[in-house]
Amino acid sequence: MINEQTARELLGPLKDPFLHKTLAETNGIIEVSIREEKKHVSVKLALAKINTAEQLPFQMKVVDILKGAGAGSVGIRFEELSQEVLEQFRGTVQASEAQDLLSPMNKVEFISIASGKGGVGKSTVSVNLAVALARLGKKVGLIDADIYGFSVPDMMGVTDLPAVKENRIIPVERLGVKVISMGFFVEDNAPVVWRGPMLGKALDQFFRDVEWGDLDYLLLDLPPGTGDIALDIHQMIPASKQIIVTTPHPTAAFVAARAGAMALQTEHALLGVIENMSWFESKESGKRELVFGAGGGVRLAKELRTDLLGQIPLGQPDWDEEDFAPSVYAEDHPIGQIYTDIAKAVQKKIEK
Image (cartoon, rainbow, N blue to C red; front, side, top):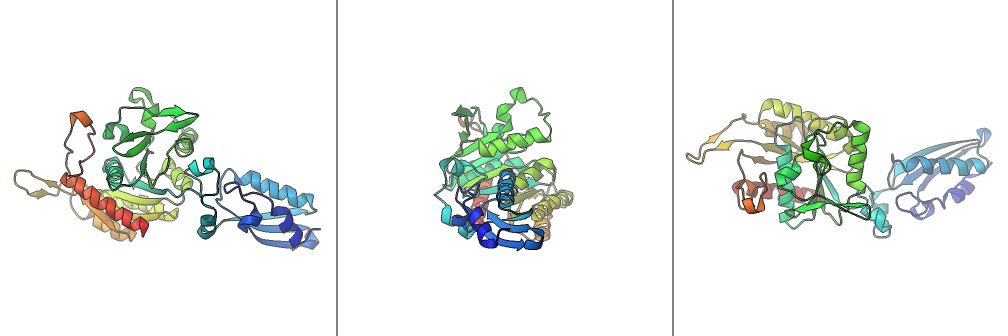
């Protein structure tokens, strides 16, 4: 029967499937305990990322090695390496690993834009926030993850399609934002009739097979509600930060609270709440009309114990036929200035 020292020596050369460094190098062997009377070996190991497809074959290697050395049974527990340890290895991983947005070695900040229901302007907020962050000099990507209700390409006036180079998808860049959407892969605005597993593969491709390059922020326009696609994304990117979009109407805010609760339950950090369609201001009289009521965003932010990042009035961007982007507000438009303020607040909260 092997002892603790032998077990550590046998497992030390195994490589972390993400860092491509040995467990000895990462100090990934946290604990080894031996029950000689039952020939049972129990180990606790730390990897760069857990609960992934790569974990199972790694686990089988551990079992094979320990049983081959005389263990009758093997118990394995996994935990993630600390951020301090991961920082030691940044810049030493393979280029292909660094390009994988889901790799723990990638430093991009994920910002998910969610809502409890449709029709509250979530995609409009996603598009304008992405553009506002790009105007602040940030490198920004935007995934239209609302698979069934994709709208980002039309809202941004995107007319080109992604290119494919060496089996990598090159996102379309528009207004300083790199964009990928299911809309690029569906002909003539056809409905998407795929089922869950197929959609999951599409989303995985958006993360792993797109040549995003160096990004500061990647925004995700999530589907409304708390369905399977939103849950899949929450599980894919556990480090995502989330913004909840609502209108001032009490019912919209009540439903939006579910999306916020889902973020908290899946251990996503809430950046704050954006209240859209807060009022309509008449150009003639300057009077504000509270078309959808008042107070929903404020109450939602208090309920979720987060900040109200901004209130956006009803409005219409100024269209430019030469540079057509029907849902994007110009930087000097009053609503465009509100988005700039929100982008600054988001940047400050993340960098803090």
